[in-house]
Image 1 (cartoon, rainbow, N blue to C red):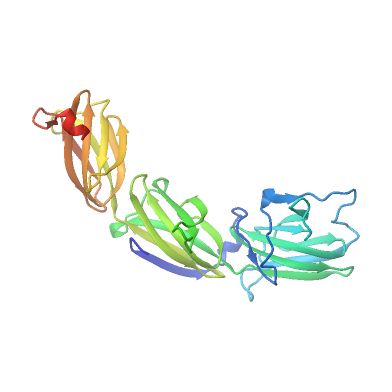
Image 2 (image 1 turned 45 degrees about the vertical axis):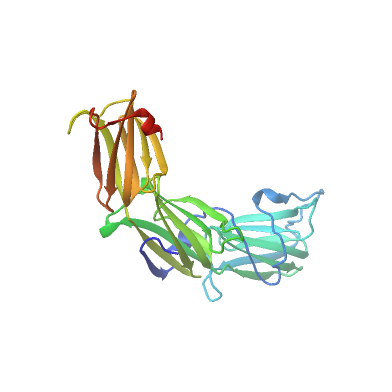
Length: 320
């Protein structure tokens, strides 16, 4: 489950309540509406007819949401959507919406479905509106997740070279996991329903990948830091030690098993690699050169491949 060392720190989610929303996502169903299929943003229908279902003369309904059943009201960052429960052409008509914290709607008396989304967390509830004003609350059962990564010894990784992807914690029958959020920047807070999530941390773009399962608790901010065992490697083809890099060089990188994992062209081949043994093959014009090297976690290095007759390989041998 873990390919690296992970450190989890839990703190109360006070600051999380004042951050901007991320986007609409999966909904948690409460109050007996687990069998309902609430549509996404692009899957609802506008109501037909000359009279709007949201009327100034209807019943006033005040909606509020909390992270936990004993939590305080969320004051900002909520997207409210009110739907009629009867589908129109396979879609639920949305009759009202609002952004912010606690919201007040004037609606015709009747039954409605209310959805509150808070980042990637959400909840759905069936409400009944009468002629008298009333109040309803939704418990999101949600928390926050903040991700970061370091190298061995606690060395910081440049944020531009680090990304996270968050998947559902439970794998499907074929072993795949549903992707929830791709390309999450380090140290950004993502709001999620409470539960276990599978997080993939990618350093660079080759094979420095750490996977871990992380639990998000309702009403708390989970801070998770993973440790990458990798280093940045720069390779160049030179005619002599310490010489200038030769332009128009094609590079092929092989792992310990001899499988190709990266190809690039240029005077320099720079990449992030997980610790381990590798073979680099450099081709310039009709000559092929090869060198074995080892990547040590946290130790960035420059590797020179000598373009000498002694180091040159037979082209047919290199093609194999």
